[in-house]
Image (cartoon, rainbow, N blue to C red):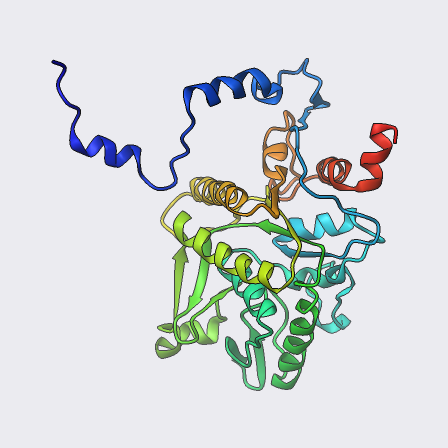
Length: 339
């Protein structure tokens, strides 16, 4: 008689999250999934001018009158540019000239980590306000909103007013036909006193004050936490009326790490976590599709980045977002099929 396998083997095999296919199912996939039969070579139909175009199976369409809300890292702004002329509330948000620190006025809306994105989605769906939490005094009489990714310190009244403007903007989220989420990174500052994830660390004045500094910590969000944060927020949003989500991972790398790792390895970990979480969310929500912007950019046979080796070249961005719209835009799909 053959020896019995160790008891712990079955525990490992039956672990939560393990995808299991029967032999028949696996072989059927092998026969019928043409896009999975071979990684595209340079002679493949899906390969053009250095870029691979993955096969997509959209479960919904974006129509001319669709209301689209975007949330995420700077790649979300690239997607907005492709949607010019559409009903995209975030693309119309701007700041007074004196408050803009970068070329694009709505870049202050950037959300980088799963924690801040989940907060925004949850608070918007539940019509909650952050109040004055995570607003800190940087200089005498000048304050910063740590829920935002940038901006110059301003008088408290203006910071509060701007927070109200952004809260009002986010009321468009759950009434949207499509929410496009662009996941960015997993290193996140956390305000322990206010129990909030932040988009930036506090300024030098807070860092120098040991009492205030103790309020903040860096969290490197693990896969289970990222999934829990985002799935809980999406459940609330779908329950409040949101129709569809198009989820993607930003190809823009982490520029600085606060861990002891080389930033190259920290970035690889960050993107790997987010990609795995995206797959779990795709499997968990029938209203959600995953779009492979990350895979397209990193598979580019030439250097896809501009001279800073961080931001994606505009022509590559245009091709990636064009592939998204070729598959999701109802008019483009109809034209391609000859309808």
